[in-house]
Length: 228
Image 1: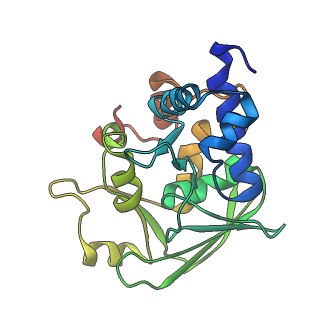
Image 2: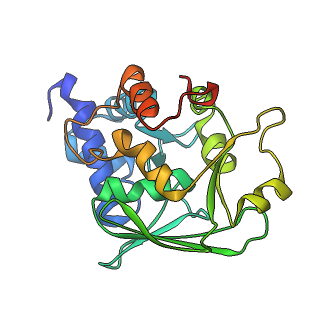
Image 3: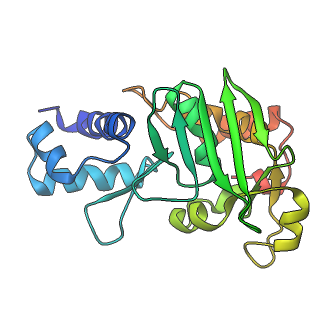
């Protein structure tokens, strides 16, 4: 058994490794067995990981719904690798982030949120090497400071693909009064790098607010949308 203060770190790593290997999360019971924990102890660790924004649980349960960027349920955001692994991501942002998280070439298959036209994006060596349609974009409907207000809502409804900016304008805004922003898939990959590129490491920690703001500024993202 890991020392009490090491449990969240070790369990987090186990959850992410399980997702990578099986494309589904481990059960609470598997965590109990793997780390010799009681149900109460395992539940405490999962809630600590949720509080630290590493995972999200199905509300009112001890079941893992999300381990960002992985989704435990089918979504419109599918990711495949050359080895034949297939994953569901939580949103357009997370689908692209799979490239940095897994450290391998990926293919993203999704749909335009307006017309349901297929969207395909291939990423290799840190770059988008092909995308169909060429005008496909990512729409982020909520300011960064509000992403964690309800992360399930954020991922499900406010981080989505469109076939073009014209399709986004035809569809409208996710949230009344919040115009959102449009980014290319390449820009989304670059914005998310500090959050995702070491996700699979045992000692992973989420970047600080100051580190993220500095990264956003380096990319020229300094308007109110990106304030945390």
